[in-house]
Image (cartoon, rainbow, N blue to C red; front, side):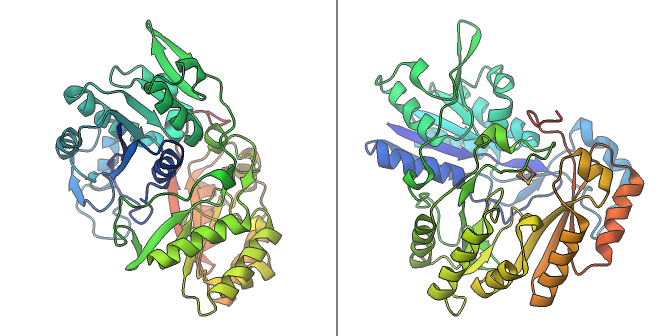
Length: 415
Ligand code: SF4
């Protein structure tokens, strides 16, 4: 059996092109290799490293063009052109046909990009008679909507490793469809949902298999970079976030030994940067401090560089942890302020205070961290004045501001 797992291209005004490694698909590949060694799994990243082409702005976003009537080369030109980032759909179709898979799995992580996942599914169904399965955060949040399309046969909700292995066993005739946890499927025009079950314990999951990529496929400032995830879910409950729909409410961490084993492997493979993509990396401060101490002992000359581009909650940082992180090889800090407005923070259930934020920013700045502070523009209860207040608040601080427009994610508490 040959399985292809696909990261689709995306279409947007801009792309965060350093955060493309499809680590979830690499987890699936490694897990199938471990439990079903006869199955061949190929991970295809049709998004990263393939350049971009200008495409028309979709109808629902065309109103933005009025704000950018002329080509603008300033840093504020973000919304002037709309692009297709990644391989063209024609190229993807031809590539998949050449591979001749028996099963196609497609990742659909972000709701704004679900159409790209569906287009890949349509291209597969046009040329091949094979089952098409979609997984990822958007698939977990909106399975019925995806299954309403004729070219999607199955959706796996939540964490995918155990369900995907069971799904392949079902295709091999070793399981009944009802026995595949987390699966949603169609039968006689109806959609059926199998119950969500616990995934494998995190320490039992194999290290993600990056063998479909070159060392140079993903880099940070020219240094080979590997993604890592040391925990799943998040203990906080921000009202705009759908993390629990994908990972459940049980926040879990891998053991330190398990994490260090993966870092050691990546170092031996030639990676020089690790990007921790956890949703809440430092919640258990003492555990993370111990990890930093072990990294300092293992890489005393900062031979490895560490970043956490998915952001770190400043509530779980203190002076000692910041010092240890800097000594261990972190030099950039991505913090999520979201909003400086008290009402917005309280109504979105952000468990944060400006005092804690300022303390971390000043201490980290003195240590030499480059700090990026993320703000969400347009949250519920946000006004133009409060957005400007947050911008002005950060403008006085030693931070680079990263601003993201708010969009409502399906299955988030406020949706
Ligand atoms: S936004 Fe971040 S801190 Fe809040 S619940 Fe989601 S992952 Fe946790």
